Length: 145
Image (cartoon, rainbow, N blue to C red; front, top):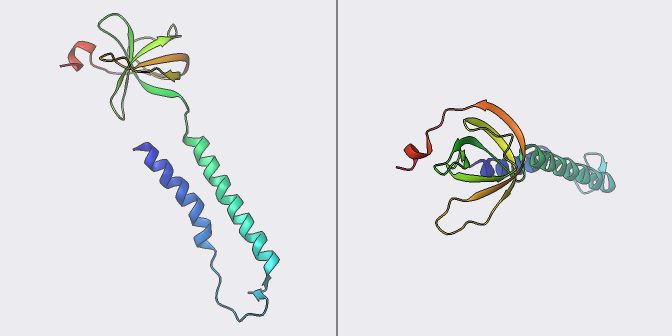
């Protein structure tokens, strides 16, 4: 869902400046409202550059790369798991998890690992990006009913 919002935001950011600049019909005298052909080209390039800047800025503002945000819990086998909120998924956390405690809402950076058949997907943690504090989560036993 969030990706759809990002795409819509980027499209609006690119199209809004283009829609805001309209010219009235003028007789063909080599200029449009006192603007020559060269000036019109320069204005077009400026509008395109502004739109590209808005799109790139929006991308970097919303793009978190390879990271996951969610609540951490202890798995039934003693492993550390992360439960995401938006599209509820549970990942087994592997790698650098020494700074992560169960019961915390965190954003971790790393890479998703290929899913083994029948096992929960794994996320190889390369580092803790942000610790948002405690969160209320169900235990692993109650959420798998």
